[in-house]
Image 1 (cartoon, helix red, strand yellow):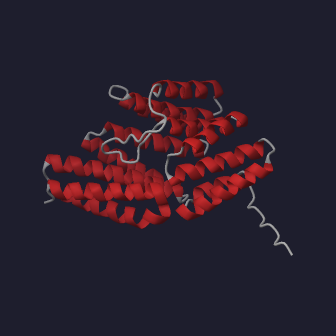
Image 2: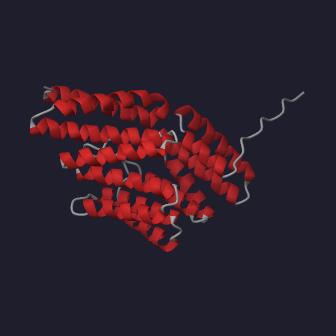
Image 3: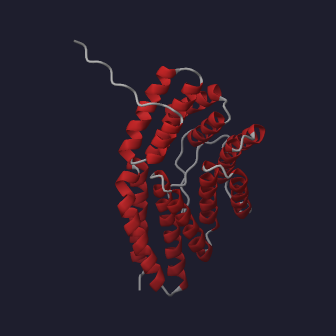
Length: 288
């Protein structure tokens, strides 16, 4: 049997892996995440007492979420979907509504990415409904921003802007940059810098590229976010500058995005640049 002290160590190990993913991305943690998830599943199978099972279930849920994010980053959406499904299952058994909602949000983003916009909107609504009774203002802001992204992907500009406004209102009066984690959902953080990233991404999808650029540049100036988040901002800036006929700025951000994406192992982000026809920059000629 696994006692509380052992579960504490497993929790700390997963938290460290999550933090490493935030700094170095999928390239640094893909194998470790798979190994930890497999081990946690085995431990959960043999746990009998209710409290350890509940704690281990939450850990399996959090590990499944991390595995899903890594799979998505490596352009494996089907694998990501399965991990998010597993997260929902074990989180339901553990009574963790937040993790279920988080998994639904991630699945909504996957569906939006493949063009299944009505289904994506349905999942984001399910996530909000599930956590409506017990959420902090910051968590409500996170839900609203993700809803804004899904609405923007569907081309619903007015509704998307309203969702981003709700997110901004929920964050009113809070520090510009904070780190807000939630028990059992490591790496789930949201602040004003994150809102700028979300809204900038959504505004680009709505072809409001000048506004998108302003938000995305603000996000970079404030800082924060994971290495994956920063790389994604540079991707969005490259695409937005390209849409506003500023090829020089587009290439600058595309080059940074590709360097970061290569370093963290994100094929998904390089694919977004390729689909946006942002070519690799040609090296400058060496002066004679």
